[in-house]
Length: 150
Image 1 (cartoon, rainbow, N blue to C red):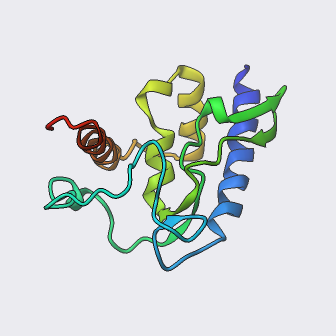
Image 2 (cartoon, rainbow, N blue to C red):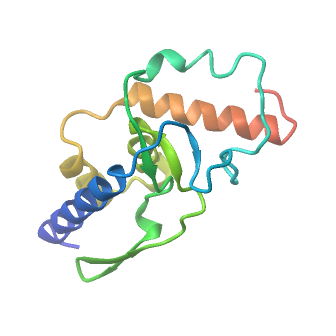
């Protein structure tokens, strides 16, 4: 895609994120109102010291709003540079402001094109401490659910 087309994608994603963020909640969890249950965060999981090694990397004053939870290029359908659909809503729920941002910065999906989209959507340097902390949580969850020690 050209730079202009990627910028158009970024602008549309900003509108979509604004719409999703308009749906607020006072509690964290799945869209069904239950706990967060999906392939990334097995339930129930109750570590003795939940995320004590990363909790200082997250803001504590952010709002909880509706989040897709996996808003990456493979879940964004386009026709040319027009977004036609967002698919794969199994991880959708109500989560803190930083959650979608961190997921969108998944290094496994980072390409120059996606990097351009993210840079337009989120000007300034990436929030590395938050991104790294989310992936530390996911690694901890993976090791716990697979019976491995982290």
